[in-house]
Image (cartoon, rainbow, N blue to C red; front, side, top):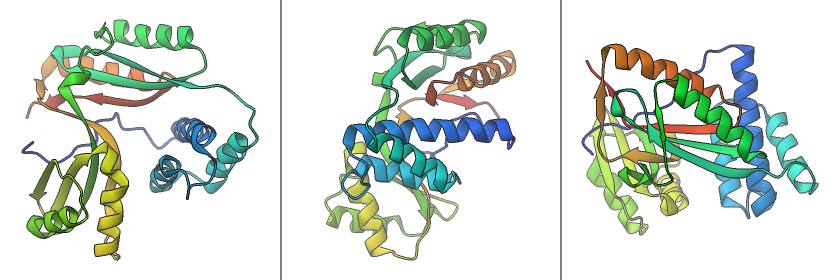
Length: 240
């Protein structure tokens, strides 16, 4: 891919409201994953992954525990995933992943954000085929050949590996997330992994600038303000 991994999400201000939204987002996702796959992280790898990610984002333990306890109780809301695809300002491609208990409400809220944000909703599959669903790991190391050998010995199907400014970025199939994570931790137990997540990585990038950039930032803010939105992926690249 020829570039370092960038977390393509609108940054959230460190306000109490932003923190509450972040906690609610993780609480909902942990609840859904635990309800569908079991409340024991040792037996539910997807739950373990999202708990680890929540801890990295400094989500308090009581938020995590409350969501798991709620799922274990068997009651509560019935959330389902919903994905929307389309084109943002400047022609960039956008994927919006949601968890919702009311599809009509969520679709309406997302459509308003697209319309007011100068973006255009497309049909299912409109842009997803232009993204790769990847496990992504970023950590400090200076020998990509050594890392590649470690992962290949663990039978990880590495899609790409990059080295830049003392950081290694590894891309692997999303199904190899835990295999890759386990191999890295066993080979380098003292190493801190800065990024470990499953993401949609764009195959190509669309450079935006000027008025398109201003509109794009407005659109990102609006779409991230939709309560049911969990993740937003795009291929926009800011012109330097």
